[in-house]
Length: 295
Length: 333
Image 1: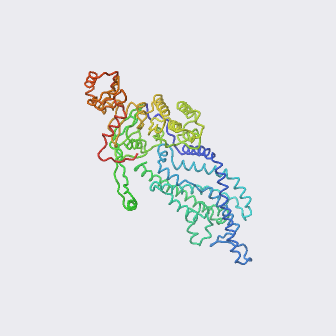
Image 2: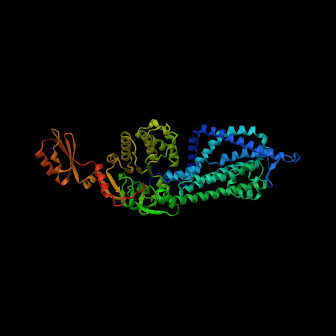
Image 3: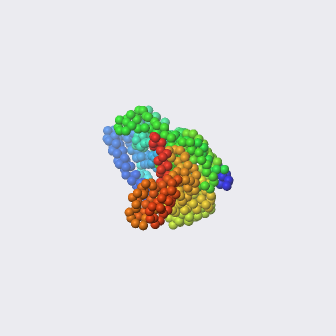
């Protein structure tokens, strides 16, 4: 029996792409088995949104009480970009859309756990790249999630149409979609990178808790970064976190000046590349350590 | 060309020594003491295509560590290995397509979905052509007798059925080498029997080389005519199963059935006696068998007599005991 005559190992970019697209397809079938969870999850997600909207209405009302009505609608913001109450509510709705693409529940913990439990073995034994597999799987997860929550979100946006004073024009809308897709990749790569820490530390949950808390704030999930003092707004806009929530929403609302739009998306893309390189590097180093110490 | 060729494989782990108690836990935050643990030491063997070989040893003997090196999960501290013509820990795709490792119940199956969906994923991972995949899958489910179960969510299957699905998944890409770590652990006798039968049939039909670890003698007796005995990281026997008894079983078992109870009391002078009713079992040094037997038959009225080898697991247990070094080190995996 010759050992070399087995199926020639398929290689090359297109074969590999084909393989991971198929893994995406199979994972999609798996994820759709949980569609009822998605639906419930989507509805439950609206509840905190309602309280946030009421909170902001109260803040705007009390701010208006002390000012001259002749100044027009009250707007918050420390620099050139300001938000009226309607825009604020529209922003918070749009942040939900950003998070729909960028949030990766359980990815970092899952990676760390598979390192600890030894489930990582699978990626070393099978002709399967962990990062490629997780990406295909998460993409399937997102597709299923977005598809099942499309109708409830559409209803919500129609109900809230009054808060949107402008609608983006064609080119802005295209860039908005690109920004959302890139925010999926940034969210994925960021959580993946955090998960790699599991190669060096057994327990990453407290670390993850700190990261998530900071992230909630600096990504603009809580409120638009423009409300911060100019220095902090400038600083946080240098970090990749803003692309997880703030940036796509700001693009949609026309808060990013027209001539900076394409540049913003390019910087976002650069972060995708940077985080990809970082996670690959950590993975390679982690595997070397894993192969030396145990498994 | 051998399928597996291991030369001087050695794996040393550095293990953190935690002092007991809270004080020790604090101290551990600042300075740590490490201890070198030799999980596998200078292990050399080679396995030819089509062989079914068992790795025998107590827990922590180094069986799993050796399998991990052969499958490329970890690299050795010293020594080399060539598996299917590759160096396993370089992990080229061509190598990964040609073998399978099944580790106990660590499952690669989606819990909430039917096994058939996980098999589909395997097809994609290994880029198997559809017709070949369908054919292999059909043959495997028939052989394991689980045709009706592949559409049922994995969580609803019994442990034995899940293990069968696990094995099917590992054979879908028709590997040339199958590494099995405790394939029947925790299973009932019937499921164990089915899995043994299937592995044997598969080996005969396809000539797939198999290396399995087990501490169930039943597995080993049923499947392998060659065993590697490892204890405390060292390989100290490589040969046929029966050879273990010849080499390490220094005594034989004489079973005597008497006509009446009680069994004569002065039987003890010939060796250790175990009495059950009118039956006595006597452990006797091999060299003295004929002498003792003659004396007994001469003195007592015996209804029936037989001379047997002691049970294999007893011999092996004694071998493991004897091989224990002064310092009993805990070895992972």
